[in-house]
Length: 506
Image 1 (cartoon, rainbow, N blue to C red):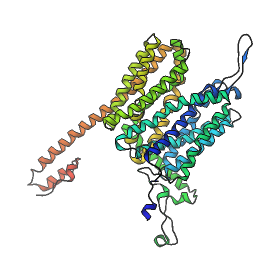
Image 2 (tube, rainbow, N blue to C red):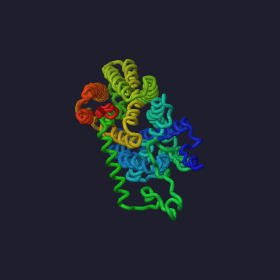
Image 3 (cartoon, rainbow, N blue to C red):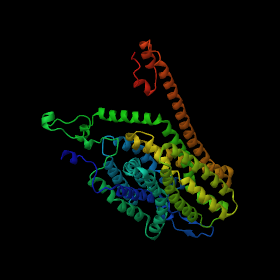
Image 4 (cartoon, rainbow, N blue to C red):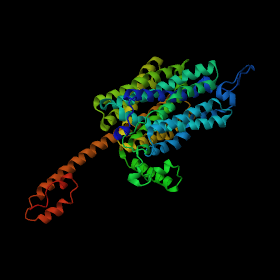
């Protein structure tokens, strides 16, 4: 009876239902990203032509009279909350049930989005956008490990691909949603609608029996001993400080110490660090593409519908490419080595197609080649996150996803847009700027390829070491006349053979 009470698996949550729920949440999260950038929600300042005819101010920028700089701050304000909260949620997952933490984070997200719709000036909406990042932090850190735990072994990467496919799909849907709702009604209603759509999910996180991540021992799972075991119901030490609301400095110090040790372990993991460095380079280009792509396309090819064209290419290639990358890795057998093969190969080929596309003078040639390039580029989404999940210990997966996400934003897409803008101001040629930007894909491919080569070299070196150890072991066994020498020599070996063979026997 006690064992069934401790069973952490709710009967309602089948793995496919869990994946579906996380995909809907991820889609809503990126619908918000797309909506705030849409013309219907973001809007414009009042513009007057030379004849004195003015168009009315619209959206957030028009209502609050924001400068372009302030408007740009709103698009990246979520990073403040994401940066601060991601490591915190990942660390708390070791002492609190991760499913409950997702419920807390989504509650913050829902109230923050509702606050955006009720904001009254720049600072009020900026603070709400920061809190949106806090809410998002819990989800992006913990959702992928949950999916990885519950996915069938032969489909793990495909399930991750399905989850990350929601990023381009949600963003594109957000453009449409924000344009329609903001244009037909009001930008505030668009935010309130998002909050209403998300509301059932934080409630679900609190009322459903919680799930548990592998490698974690949450506070709720630790039973309080009976009076027979501890006398007068004495509680277990450690997590009870949280239950009783203790504010002892030692508890905070323990959390900081544990977080520092976990971070140090992550930074010492060569596979993880190289994977994230490649991901940063990759995201640097993707971020600049999403921001400057339509403007570059309009300038180079004189597109009248650049927004629609680039948005259409991104959503189709994003969905198909992401799903294809996950399925291909599963067919290859999901291993870290195969993931790096796919990462380096797909990125390198995708970069070639995108470079050639921007060299084409005709619009039709550009569309065909750029679409192929983006298909290959987006095929990396599932493999790169598979590596982040599987190159670390199970209890570090949440932190690895948190640090990876924060890193690709801070060093990738956040600085890329202004830096590309500076480059364009200097060159004043969008074709050359686009070619310079696209070439950074080669850097990502090289970084991932280097890790693949290093792993192969280490495997070869380890094989040689095993052969040398075995050779020494066989030769040592011939010195039967000197058991002491045999023992002393054998204890210096690093191979597992030195611990199982009877070296000291005459």
